[in-house]
Amino acid sequence: MTTFAPLDMLRPANKDFLARPLGMIIDGVQVPAQSGKTFDVFDPGSGRQIARVAEGDAADVDLAVKAARRAFQDKAWSGMKAHARERLMHRLADLIEANADELAELESLDQGKPVGMARHVDVAGTIDYLRYMAGWPSKLEGSTIPVSVPYMPNRFFAYTTREAVGVVACIVPWNFPLMMAAWKVAPALATGCTVVLKPAEQTPLTAIRFGELVMEAGFPAGVVNVVPGFGAGAGAALARHPDVDKVTFTGSTEVGRLILQAAAGNLKKVTLELGGKSPAIICDDADLDIAIGGAAMAIFFNQGQVCTAGSRLLIHKRNFDKVVEGVSAIASGFKLGHGLDPETQLGPLVSREQIDRVCGYVKSGLADGARALSGGTMLERDGYFMQPTVLVDTRPGMKVVQEEIFGPVVVAMPFSDMDEVAALANSTEFGLGASIWTRDLNKMHALAPAIKAGTVWVNCHNVVDAAMPFGGFKQSGWGREHGKAGVELYTETKSVCISL
Ligand code: NAP
Ligand code: MG
Image (tube, rainbow, N blue to C red; front, side, top):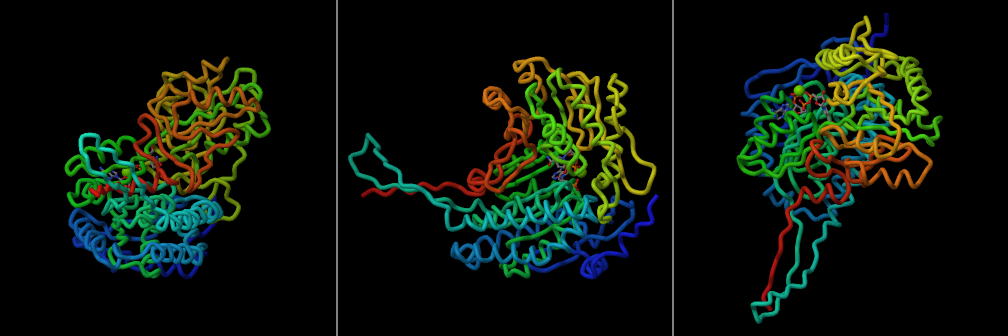
C-alpha cells in the first residue's frame, strides 16, 4: 500500500546512530553487555529490524548500580552546589533542544508515533520537564520546628532538611519513551540522586541517545546509567537489587505488583504509575462541538497508548447518538501511516504483540454483545496498524469495559443522572484520570470530588504539566510525579534536634 521508504530519508546523524553498536551506558562509558548479547529493535511502521542494542542482565545491572552508588557518594556529585546542578540540568535541556529534530525522528521510528507529535509532545515535553526540574535544586527547603518536649526541662532548636534518597532505578514503558525517562531521571537529578534507567525493550533508542547527551553535558560519570534489556532480566534485577534505594516505575498494573514484591527485600521506596480506564463524561449541557473532538482525542491520541486515555465514554443519554456518531466519524477519518510520513495523523501500534492484544480485546467485546461503529480490525499492510474503534452496546460487566486495552478502542455507555455517572465512573479497579465535559459549574463541582482519580480534567483531557501532580488512586499507582509532590518523593526528610 505504501512506497514510503523511511530508512532512506533518515537524518545523517540517525543513520550513523543506528549503524553503531548501541551499548549500555555505565559509569560514563558506552559498553556492550557483559554476556555479549544483543536484541533487535523494530520499526512498528514497517515491521523491519532497525537496530541492535546491548541486552543488559543482572550482571550489567550490578555494575550500573555500583557505578551509581559510587557517583552518589562522590563529592563531585554529592558536594556539588545546587546552582551548579541546576546549570548542568539546563545544559542537558539545551543539548536535547539542539538535537530535538534528530531525537523526534528517532522516537517516531522506534515507537511509531507521527514525527511532528514526537517533536512537539515527546521531545518538547522532555525539554520543558528538565527545565522545570532544573529549578528545584536551590529550592529544596526544610523547615524549623517548634519542639516542646513536655517531659524535659531543656530548650530545643529543631529543623528539617531534605536529602537525596540515593540510587534510583527508573523503569519506563514504550508509549512516551524519552519523556517517561525524563519524568523519572529529572527529579532524581534535581534532588541529587543517581540513577539506573531501564527503557522498554520495544523502544530503547532515545534512552541511549539521552544517556550520550548526559555525558556530553558533563555530568559526573555514574550519575546516569542506562541499561537496556528485558523486563524479566534487567528490569527484575533492578527491582530486587539490594543496593537500590528507590524504584520508580511506569507501566502495567500487573508488573507494578511484581516490582512491589521485588522491592520488599530491602524495603525500597516505590513510586508506581500504572494503568487506567479513565472516563470522559459528557454531560447533558456540554458544548458538543468541543466535547466530541475532545473525547476523540482523549482516546485516540498516541493510538490510545496513553495511561490516562479516555477509554470509557460516558454520555448523557440525550446526547448519546450525536456524540458516538461524531466520535466515530473522527475515528474513521484519521490518516494512518508511517510515523515519518508528514501526512500521517495516527501511526501504528508499538508492536505485533500489542496489536494482537488490542484486537483480542475487541473480539472479546464483540463476542460479549458490543457493536463496532468504526474500526475494529488490523489493517492489511506492513506494520501494526489499526483503525480507531468505537464500541457501543457495552455494559459495565464486560472485559472491554473493565480492563485497560492500551490501544485505540473506546467503549461508550449512556447515563441518565449525575449520581449514576459518578458510580459508573468509579466502577473499575483503576483511578488515574477522568474528564468532565460541561458548562455547568455546579455539575463540575459536584462530580470532581466524587470521582476517585488522581487527575480530573474539565473540558479538556490528557493535559499534563511538570508543575501539576500526576498519579493514581486505587490500583492506578502509588505516589505522585511532577511538581513539589513528585520531587519530594526522591528525598528523605531528616529532623535535626539540638538541645540548647
Ligand atoms: P510492562 O510490561 O508493564 O512494562 C513496563 C516496563 O517494565 C518495561 O520497561 C518492562 O520491560 C519492565 N518490566 C516488565 N516486567 C518487569 C519485571 N518483572 N520487573 C521489572 N521490570 C519489568 O508494560 P508493557 O509490556 O510495555 O505493556 C503491557 C501493558 O502495560 C500495556 O498494554 C498497558 O496496559 C500497560 N502500560 C501502561 C503504561 C502506562 O503508562 N501506565 C505504559 C505502557 C504500558 P520490557 O519492556 O522489557 O518488558
Ligand atoms: Mg513487556
